[in-house]
Image (cartoon, rainbow over all chains, first blue to last red; front, top):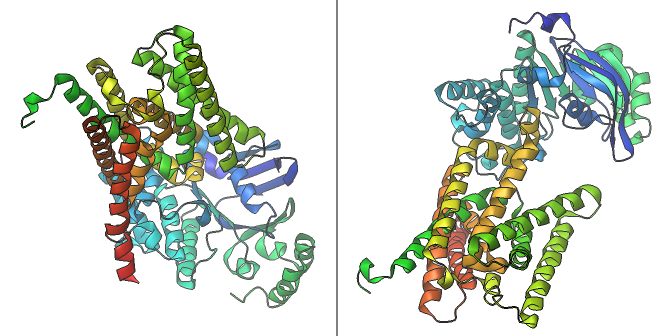
Length: 261
Length: 286
């Protein structure tokens, strides 16, 4: 894209964002600015609202207060520049589609109503499958893949969107080591190409190795900035207070400098 | 009967129309099943009886188009109730569906028995919408049903990409800018339309079978949505025609139950014999 706005405005801006499910607040007054390019981790305990933060950015949950701008504009104007990888468990993997069918879904938004994917879309989908190393499985029904392969199919679908800003929701949950490395190599490439990749992630031990920026979330924003500055023992204690069981493990992880992946 | 010419014109037209209705029901039903909304269709189907009777009471007419418009209004109203209950109460989905189904069907039965108790002239025959009865269909009615069915199939085929996307991954569809709720309601409305069109053949109680059993049977044979749609259509066609033929051959045999029996037979074959997903194949695989 030749849009100069991409470099002038931060890619993602949350202004005072509050989200509630019913009367229970899930996110409270979140102010967060994320600049492109980079690999940015959203970290925090279970139920802290990490996924909700992504959904708020993507317009998938109503905001009680505040607003989100992407590339300095409202979401509706820049949707085609945004890619999304939802959590793997949110879909039925017994659905009668094969790997290629799913990856092609990444091209649907640009096709618009009624038009079917053609040769150009198939080429794009094939290139995306090559990047995640699944081109040989293009014809396989998606239920006959391992968890890691399924996650890579979702990533390939997002790559087929050819976006500038990617949101990924727990792309490494239940994923084997080989797929993990493959996925992170692709995300790293995206950063090198000048894009911003925002990842909801639950494993703090790997966070320091992979992300150059991070936010710690527990309903409120606890800290945000360069990963090393964010993952301090003090910040972790504030984020994970009340989650005693993980605290010990975290303490040990932090002592070892987060290099225990 | 040893030649087509020996079959009366009316019977022939009805048979062709029922074939088209059966095909369309199977096709449309696929998205009801894939989106896990099969029971919502059943609630809509049971509500149609009240719509049929109400249409007769309000207009005093009993031509098929009038009655089926009433049925469609009732079907959409019941689906509207489902949406409202889901949205504004904490009732769970299955309970809400059962509630709408039984209440709307109860209303239909009360209206129907109230009519026959008062001996209102012209009301006789409405009870045929309970279990289905194709013998009374005129050629004109049958052609109307076939045309509506064909239109519904064309709409589904045109929106195949959108319907598949929303059924498989609604969150991704919404994130990429598709109006998920609109597509969802359109799919439900198409199922409701097919339930109404299938009403004269299968009846309010069992018409769901035509939109549920063929897709479930078809899923056994294929891993692709387009193939599943075509197979479900063919299975629906065979069930509908088989059911109508059997009930025409045997006096007093209701059409709806016969259709269900034929469809269930095809499902049983699919369940046991399908390659890969079939029972035998899985036993061998283990």
